[in-house]
Image 1 (cartoon, one colour):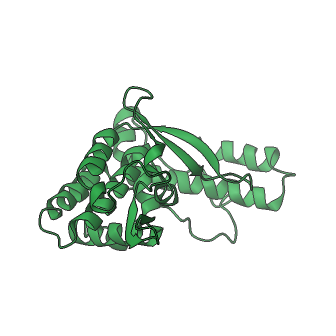
Image 2: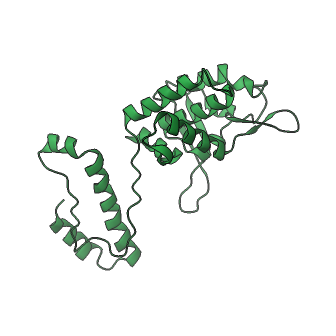
Image 3: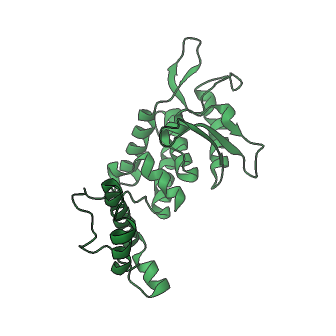
Length: 237
C-alpha cells in the first residue's frame, strides 16, 4: 500500500460516502499501521526487506480526529510473567479463594479471549467437558452487534484453559459454595451469600480490581493500562 493507493481509495471509492465513513476509514488505517510499527516493524523488515509505513500522507490523514485509541496487548512473555508471579502469590495471600478466583478469570480471558462481562455471567453448567478435544464454554451472554442483543457462542477450552478450570473447580470453587449440583450456580462466585446460603455471582468490578492489583505487583510496567479488554486481546495474537 502506497500513498497513491490511498489517493484512489479516498478520492474515488469513498468520494460520495457519508462524512462519518470518510473519517472512520483513514482513522482505522492509521491505528492499524501504528500497531504494526510499534509491535512488528523489525519482524516485517526481516521478512520483506521493507520498512512498514502508513500509506496515509498529509493529504489523506483524517481531519479533526482524536488521537487513535491504540490498545496494544502485552507480549506472550509479559503475560507469562504476570501469571507466574500471580500464581506464586496464591501460596502466601491472605484470601486464597478470592485471589484464586480473580486469577482464574483473568487467565481465562488471556487464554480464550473471554470478556469480563461474559466471565461474570458463566454458570458451572456452561462448561461442556464432553464437547470437542478439550471441552467448550457455552457463553450465553456474549456481546451483540448493532443492537441485536446478547449472542451465544461456544468457546473451545484451548491454550490450557481446560486445566485452569479443572483446578479452579476441584480445588477452589468449594470454598465459596458446597453444592456443585445447584441449578444456576455461578462459575465465579462472590464471597457474599444469597438468602438461601448459596453464593452470589461475582461482579466485574471485583475481577477488574483483582487484575489491576496483580498487574501493579507482577507487571509494573503496565500498571493500570492492563485492563480485561487489553488482556483478552493477547489471546488473538
